[in-house]
Amino acid sequence: MHKLIHLVTLIFTSFFSSALFAQTVQNNPAPTDFMHSNGKIYVVVLVVIVILSGLFIYLINLDRKISELEKD
Image (cartoon, rainbow, N blue to C red; front, side):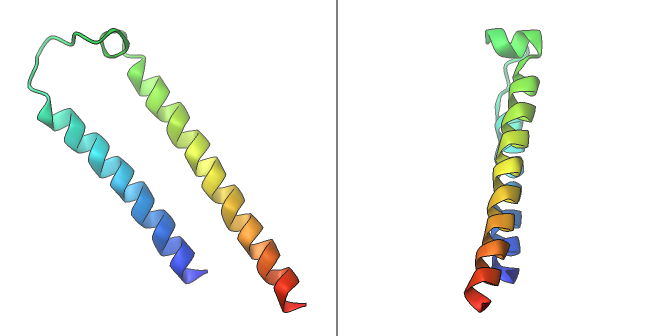
């Protein structure tokens, strides 16, 4: 279980660090992308993060239940 928490933490930090790096690399002052110019890209990123976090929480709970069944 301890290893699973480390794995989830590693995945989340890699997502956040790559998103921050992607924002700092772009030096174009005028956004040309439609989603970025309207500010909707942040909504898309938020929805993806919520879905992925829900999947991770589901997998952690499923792992706990399977571990309990294996003990019995």
